[in-house]
Image 1 (tube, rainbow, N blue to C red):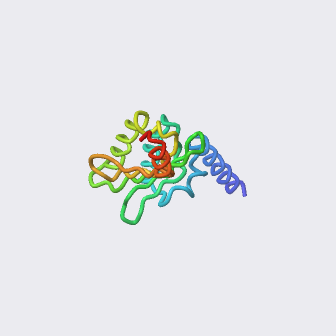
Image 2 (cartoon, one colour; image 1 turned 30 degrees about the vertical axis):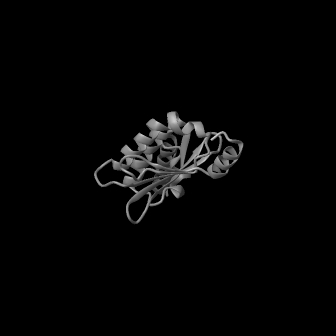
Image 3 (tube, rainbow, N blue to C red; image 1 turned 90 degrees about the horizontal axis):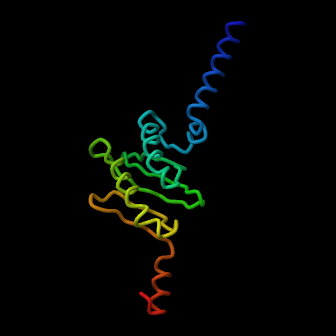
Length: 146
């Protein structure tokens, strides 16, 4: 009976250590599709890159085709889906996200968190889906300001 109590105590201690070292791991485990070592390593790298922009990763997915997809949440509850695509060579997705992070403060932050979807799978740029942009353009064309 004492040995099983020791094992239980050691297990509880291990869980507590993991909870301190990786506080979001237990919460995010269900939000990381295919949570294996590779996915968790990418999660850490992606999270480090988007944190200075005020985003956290709400969901990380690796599809059956090995394409990465992020769901980000901002401080003001802004939501952003980021399609990173596949790693043709090591760190392709990471480099695409770096490019996006470098451009975000200059180009996209002006949209005020209204960007709903970013597709970074293009080699020389990216595509945006901005909800309500067509209505904005239509209103400004009528007013003669566009």
